[in-house]
Image (cartoon, rainbow over all chains, first blue to last red):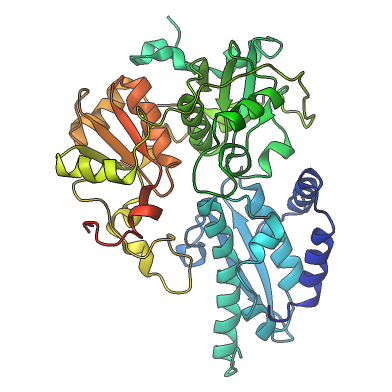
Length: 152
Length: 287
């Protein structure tokens, strides 16, 4: 697995230390409780489909906002009020990838979803959550390309 | 006549309202079971006294692609304190998608005393009814399950091929983009877990969620359901129908609607669905 941004790696290591399913679920719920929706200065409803995560059944949206240091802040919206996993992942991606080197963000593997949530996910849920990771990585690649840099 | 009965279903007794459930929270002959797609939801709060069934962990064989056998089902029932005389009421997220899936698996073992809470989790929450984070513990039940019977309500791939040959009716309950195969070709994003896109020839496309009212997740009335399945998809009550989706979960919802709400006597769920069909060598596919 390529090197993960430090903050994300720390969170994943913390999750790895909680093998008990019930405890891990509680930890992920606590993380979801920190979810903050995309600020109105960036987007208002109805959100543009340009930011809609394909295949995500919780109707998750992702935005990348330029930071002065050339990296990106990531913002999310989750329209399904029952999309707790999507909210939890959104918090992990925001806290773990906002401001991280874009080369590392671009290389974040989609299967980190399984490391976070375990293998007990439906295919649809897996695809939706992996779609969130893919969209964040894609935004980092687009930013690198726009800046004339390579993701590798 | 209750509001559910007034909707004209053939078997209205398979549905109970949120109010009915709220009045039976202490009933020892009732076990409320939450079954969700999102594995975190139950932990955020559930109907007081409800146990959780996780479809991957609890209903599936952990090695082969198949459901648990009767010994596994017996063990699950004992663990949840469900006896053969216990009425199980399922509910869950996503318009009861996973609740009907669990219901369908229970029917493979002949647990007939089962119902769905109309509207599922979203309706319960919208009505501001109580949610609890306390995980209940029930005394183990003595449950000896019948051997799993796959004949009546489950279809396997050879049976679907035979069904195709005999011009049997098929309903593909996936989204239009999955039905046409369009979704397999989106770069950078997850695909459908199949090598080929499209649908089984002759299948009509009726996305599963059309059977529910989007505002509160309740099932549409019988007349509205007939307009969809009989008016648009041209089914008739005596058709031999096979329903499918990607792995048989969404189609269990349509199986429930056709079997119980519209009273079709022969409906089978092809749980191999598109993840099997779309990877088979040489089977016919239509786009």
